[in-house]
Length: 453
Image 1 (cartoon, rainbow, N blue to C red):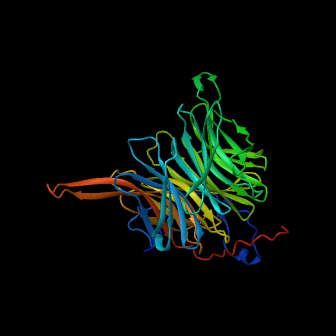
Image 2: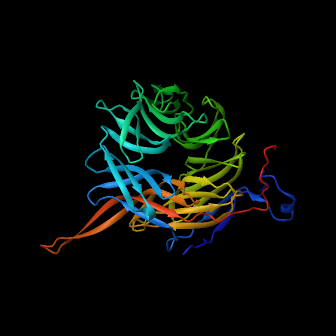
Image 3: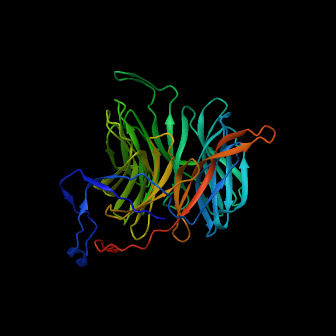
């Protein structure tokens, strides 16, 4: 049963911000004000919400987790992830084809030497591109790109590396030119040492954003060096010729601030903004809204000395400036983090919020928030499975379904037939959940922008 939460709204500012979405004449008789800043106190979840279907993948003896997925056809979902064990640092790459209602059609597992993590999957013509991170025999990390057919067979592999630094991939998207890709990486100089009092050896850990060809050839790759350390966690297309990059910057005193950059086609900085909140903040994802705004989602941690958990953090900012239109914090009896989001053409925002309860015996779970363009929370759907769930990616299905790709923690009771002893085996398994599409939405306060505006 879908349960609408009772929320306690706490206005942090007395001002009323009129969000700059053009208002039509019909809307002027309505209350179209936008609260600039609100904290939502989330009620503890009691039961889960309805879903279209969900599916598990894995074995008791090993751990599996899905990290990314895409629909090759309306009823063919392909997921990619990792098979791992606690006894080995390397992981296997797994690709799984799911048919109707999540039924497994095929599976392929690949031993990639030195593979430490799988990051993302993208379609590339009639094939799939999988992004991962590997470590060579000398312990140096670099980016791995695999080209697969749509039945999971590996065709060819490429790499992006640096001779002096450990390089790890964070995200990848198609470039605006339709031929190449924007690749987000993190550089760590092995010689880096911060001895305090301004004494620094080597380059601090920082982001490098490459434009690469499908075969991994680097077209350009500027480095970004603000702060004592920084990391870009994701990149998203916006407009016809720019990108939004999000992550964090760590200052010399160790505090982390959320970081957003608008980048042009050459990955040059149009603007960048830091957003400090509490003791630390990160911005995980972004998505464009109506061509003029960007919704960003992440996590904010309370100030030192406060025992509250972290808050999921969602805000609307201007695409031309980074100025804040509205922002929302989602708190409660758990550590919350907004991990992913997507936006419908009608402006409804779906946010995947992970919850890790403060009590050890409570389950981790995923909330799917539905928010309108003015920051009003319509509904929260809560999803459980086994002993807990983690969401890695939120994608759209053929009919607008909201699909969560991730993992779940399962407990299996295994009985020894000879001794009648029962042993509990806990295992992580790949998890896919297909939630219902959001209902069509029309906001009388918002007039859609025409191309001439």
